[in-house]
Length: 176
Image (cartoon, rainbow, N blue to C red):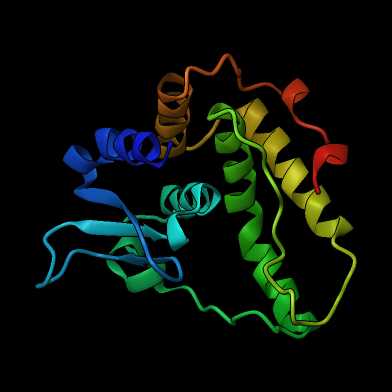
């Protein structure tokens, strides 16, 4: 299954964007091409399929200038965030998690929303779930950004999915 994911990404984006999907051994990260490697690398965590989809979503959102920066130039406060840090984290995670949800269904896989803060301050994730759901509805109505749409369609083909991009395939109640 991971090989199909990696192949689908590389088939879509290696030739045009000089970018490859890499199964990592530790935390996810994005590396632009440099002296050590002549192509950009979207590295996903520990071979987890969901991590691959999530990191691809970040790549699909990042603009050209951000794709020249390690981890797209984003800040990241690890697990253990306080309430203010968690709110900032969730704001930048709405679009990628919405895309990841869509990618998951396109690949015939379950989706689990992530607040990625198991050791931080607890909070009600209902607002975040609602925001991700609303973003999915927006993508369904207005369409995905170009790279995300290309990859979404490639997932459907690679995983022989009969899924179609429509609002009926998503529900707020299904978010766990």
